Image 1 (cartoon, rainbow, N blue to C red):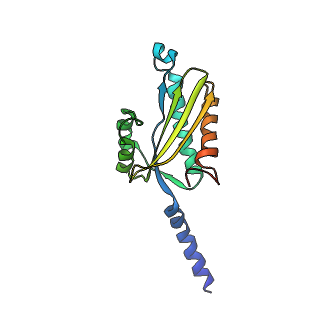
Image 2: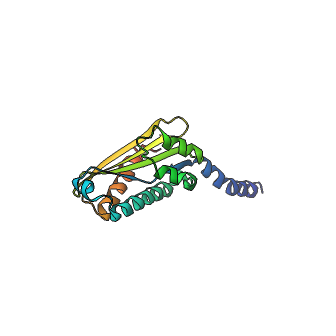
Image 3: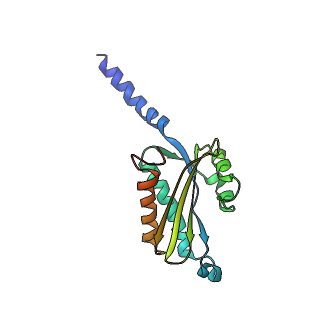
Length: 169
């Protein structure tokens, strides 16, 4: 008879235990660093802005799918984050993550050298200390939806979330 109450208690507590093991994460939108001649001459491209948004959403999805992370809503600080260069603001990403109650601040960049040569970077910082917890980088070829999504998936699978060597454990 004792087994039923213990099993019931475990079913009730299991979601709480799982949630306690998750780390809260504020994933900010990716930023484009366009050092290409095309960018200097023509300015912002709408297709690249759409790719930045989808890459950010894809990274959020990949983190949640692991079951190890819970996303924190960044809406209260999103406008301020968009108005800054999160890689050069002296730790504002960490401050903004703390403001929304996240343990980790995740930022990303895509550097465009040309329509053929691009680089994607993801940075993860501890919100309480500002310490860099993880960084991952991948060069990729082709400025297309497919190349951007493949680059992010490769970074998530092989650098950030890899079972044996992942930066985010």
